[in-house]
View 1 (cartoon, helix red, strand yellow):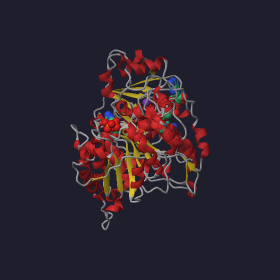
View 2 (cartoon, helix red, strand yellow):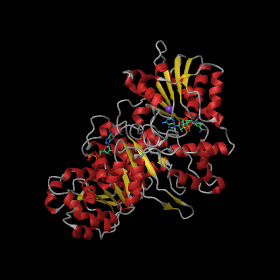
View 3 (cartoon, helix red, strand yellow):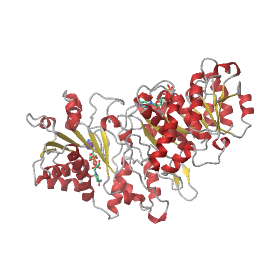
View 4 (spheres, protein in one colour):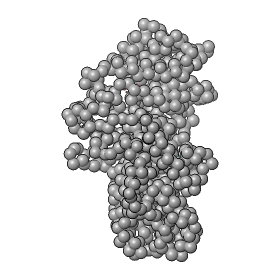
Amino acid sequence: MISGTEILTAAQMRAMESAAIASGAVTGLELMERAGGAVAGHIRLRWPKPGRVTVLCGPGNNGGDGYVIARALWQAGWRVRVLGLDNTAGPDATEMRRRWREIGAVLPLTEDELRCPGESSDVYVDAIFGTGLTRPPEGAIARILAYLGGSGGDWGFFRDRLVAVDCPSGMCLDSGAFLGTRRGPGEYDLRARMTVAFDSPKPGHLLERGPDCCGELVIADIGLRDWRCRAPGGRGGWRSQRPASLTAIWPDFGIADPRRSDGDDRRKAAWLSKRDDPGGHKFGHGHALILAGGAGQGGAARLAARAALRVGAGLVTLCPPAPALTEHAGAPDALMRRAVDDTGALRALLEDRRITALCLGPGAGVGRAAALLPGVLSSRRPCVLDADALTALAADPGLMGGLHPGCVLTPHRGEFARLFPDLDARLSGPQPPAPDLDPRDMARFMPDLVAYRAALSEMRGPAYSRLDAARDAATRSGAVILLKGPDTVIAEPAPRVLPDGPAIPGRAIIHSAFDVPWLATAGSGDVLAGIITGLLARGLPPLDAAATGAGLHAAAARRFGPGLIADDLPEEIPGLFRDMERITAAP
Ligand SMILES: NC(=O)C1=CN([C@@H]2O[C@H](COP(=O)(O)OP(=O)(O)OC[C@H]3O[C@@H](n4cnc5c(N)ncnc54)[C@H](O)[C@@H]3O)[C@@H](O)[C@H]2O)[C@@H](O)CC1
Ligand SMILES: Nc1ncnc2c1ncn2[C@@H]1O[C@H](COP(=O)(O)OP(=O)(O)O)[C@@H](O)[C@H]1O
Ligand SMILES: [K+]
């Protein structure tokens, strides 16, 4: 849960490969052998008895991997049928096709050939498009993909036996959307049993349709990792990478900040449990204010307050208007209560510098949130703005100017649409085709890897993604944005300038929680807001507080299991801390 793994955009991955090849450390053919060999290996792990396989090879290097897979499985005793095209795009794929042709035939890549009676296979390998997809598939290939996706009524048949190379073809690896189709579940989306991708997950594996359509995601090491982590010229220094935790992935995206303290799971666990601060006192862990609403609306704020306490804020004060104080008199007794009727009262309270974070939104009521927002923002204190505070913010764009880098905005998609209607429209609208990317072009930034990675993370994929939307919203608002969903995306404003380095884009994180659908329950967002507020109060920087908060929130839901209600989430946090300490203490 604690560690993340770096993810790469399709452009970054392609550039990494071409830069590795340009360095002379490895050839394209060797990389393709490793990639195809890894896929064949994973097929043999899952289907130990050699059977029948149909390999579908597209026009580029994804197809090249397919020819390697065909050869490797044939050598392992499989009966192999290959469907491909007459022409391949590059020399490596052409060579792999030639090597396969010494063994067997290449049949036409058509739906008729795929449906040929009597040629049913145990495994189908989709090596049609990978990171090179730039526009929606058309013609014969589009028909094959629709057939594999179930247009022929065989959806379950292929879902059980389709292995995708890098991604299900037609899916954009930067967004998780199927190009040329409406966003959201599509009738004929290609859904694989297993996807084997190379080196690092790509955003599309974790966003939108990706997790469902990729099936089991396997990340195969093709030997770029050591090369990638090296820091040529002594500049920067890249974080060493950790293996992906594919159930709770919490990856860093974009460029690594060399100064950032990260990766030390044991230290993080000790910090969360406070074991690293044996002599500490409560004010050492911050004081969080949760601004509650009027009578009858208190539940949401109390959930947030309870979560802030459980996550370790030293003190938490719930601040409803005076008439609602009695409603908030119940448990937990650890919670303090203080009436805040208006901005004046809030400003007076905030004279106390020991108050280190605020939360406005859950159960606040839009009118009260609008009234309190200027006071919250002008205090320049770290804060979480959620629910009604986001609605109030959207209704008065003048308030946007008061946002600062200590603010964490936690919109779900509906709130995001109210705040950033143009960005939301781009997420729903038709996708313009992306220009074909030339890897040689990308390698021109070498050998300054820091500048090179920074430039690459600004490159956009063919479909505008939730990651793009969150990053654009963060940059526009000047605040950290946490766009909620099973594929929560968190982004900080860009650009940042390191004292000793170039301007680099803000960091962004994808938190994938597709495995805990029971988290979609009333009040769960209020708990998330409280967890993040508690972590901000304890002094975690906003992006880290948001990411750690999203991780703890989903882990709490995972630990509880189905049947969860929002009240259960804060109560799982102590057990989570114990689990983390135990896991990180293991040798
Ligand atoms: N570059 C390398 O050295 C390596 C690449 N590998 C594989 O290569 C893949 C990327 O290869 P490519 O860059 O050749 O790209 P793809 O094989 O994904 O795409 C093939 C070609 O199709 C074209 N194309 C894009 N959209 C199309 C559409 N809708 N209809 C028709 N043609 C379309 C593109 O211009 C591209 O040249 C990766 O996904 C991975 O599987 C691996 O072999 C590892 C090494
Ligand atoms: N299908 C899902 N799987 C996993 N998590 C989800 C899913 N749907 C929503 N979530 C998470 O549940 C929480 C819901 O928050 P929100 O929409 O604000 O609900 P509420 O307003 O009821 O509290 C968010 O953290 C979101 O990321
Ligand atoms: K593919």
